[in-house]
Length: 156
View 1 (cartoon, one colour):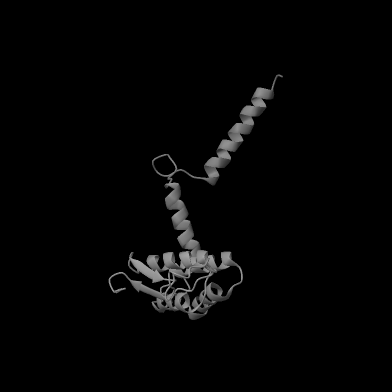
View 2: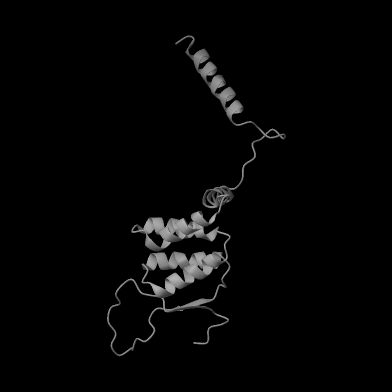
């Protein structure tokens, strides 16, 4: 149809001008793009690491980590606790793992959190202390972590 090509050209031109206004180019003429992994990591840190980390915020994150009935909320609290600057958080997470039965998935993420917070790579933990090998039964979950120590300090 006559005029339809002109209309398409005008629509594309309008879209291009809107894109140029919405996403301005850098001084070299191209848009500055980071790798997707870098974008995701930066965005994750920005969302999980608020500027105001007062004691109420820290207490709320730790309370959710320990007491929330939904595992996904506990995992989110563990992700947030990685970025909390208070040094006592590492000890609180360690004591929590050693003193209470915790779902295995949450245990795994808590150990990852402790490693990200600066504990050494060689964490050893014993969930089956005082268990004889002759009377093996299928374990009941969640296991309680009895010991959690650095590999450098752990002597068996």
